[in-house]
Length: 356
Length: 250
View 1: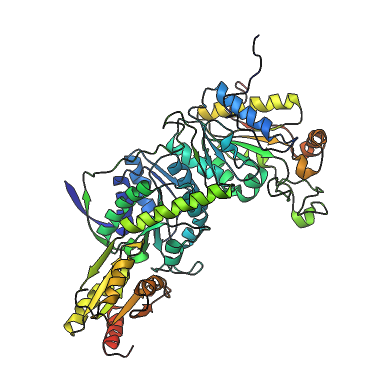
View 2 (view 1 turned 120 degrees about the vertical axis):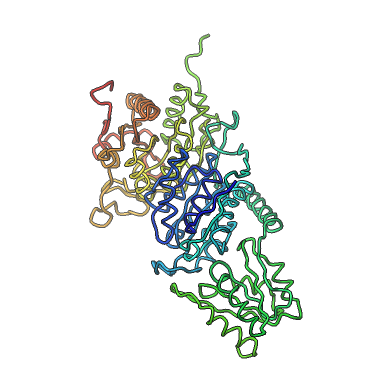
């Protein structure tokens, strides 16, 4: 059984969290993700859950640390400036290995910037942002239905690996409305959390949730364990969408909104006889290195074109994966500007004609 | 022979690392004894903070979470909202609670969060080696006020109990001291009352405990107890600042 409804991306995230069994939300208002809070302020009442408006993003992420460390499925959401404030908590959550889900509906920066869509937090969420060696598992949807299913999946991934999962959406994806099929019944996995500080509900064992280890041997041991967990995630959890790669001469790499635009560009270019393909990372970390690297080795491929709503962030990972085998070109817009289909098509034409 | 005194089951028995003459150990024992007397060691959840007591998760026998600097009330809020039936407490020092964690403690109190904060005020940063705290007295020499705290440069010490007691969400706030036996006993009564009111759902509760730091004060242990009495209490008067049951069974 399922139900088809028209929803904003932000609402889809909120409903998906409830469907995934999340009953605790802590957040602080910020545009353009506020619908998540509006939706959950009502919805949590229906399901006997907790909606708490925190005094700051710093407090909210620490409430997540407490609630998830005590064994619950927990969500917080924010947008770029608020995500900067949460970075302290990200690092502690990584060190304490607390399964958490954080939504970042990105707006344009730097600083207070503006409220229009951007993808300028790729570095922050994918590469770190907090202190120390850690990784977040980062999921990027390019449509509302996908946002719904990735949000549900985020809770399973968080629990499975005891890791912080970031749903990284640009403002467009959060604000746009599309039909969503909401499953009536979900095959929600239940994860045992014998490690949680739950008031010894996991048995008469003294549980401690912490990220501090004064003994360097022990702390290096924790780091080694984290790194091997990250290698396991890299091996098992890469998600990527490709299209028209078979005979592509130009390969666009893009996520979120840019990938949607790219799909139209591919169709238009085909009409003009230019063969363009797309690689759309769904997991920004783990990054789909292998498919990019394989594609770069193909003789048919002349160049890569990376499109982002920033000044060039994911393009660094694309270049590492291409590893000098082909030229990687970049086109980005910032400040809340979004490239038009014609703008990208024009670049594609110039690449095809050897003039970029 | 009858055993008239024993170590409480609320403590794990791990030897504590505190300096000679530091009163954190006494505060730990009081909290742990109350946990045992209320029979909640098996269900209570504590939150350690950042400072000398960062690792008291090794000392308390209940489940514990270690929080980032100042964030213990937010962490405890998350814990309590998941386990409303558990007794949840934070253990914080003055730097943690009254400087970097000011927003978190004020809002936990304002929400009437059903948690108890054990606030140990020794007027100095202990673990980072004796810097000025928000509670450092005027004239007090610290490593960052080598010429004494000067109000014109460093501002004034904060009285947290008085400040938080103005909030409607605060159900019980008392300031006690570790400087003599009578006051230690009074402190235990205050902790018992705070925990009991929390379990009755009364709201936010806090016990501020004036405590020593002989190492960073540069005063011997006995002199430190005297220093609390002579120097700290005039700035931080003892007493009950908030009690929603006042006129009732206090």
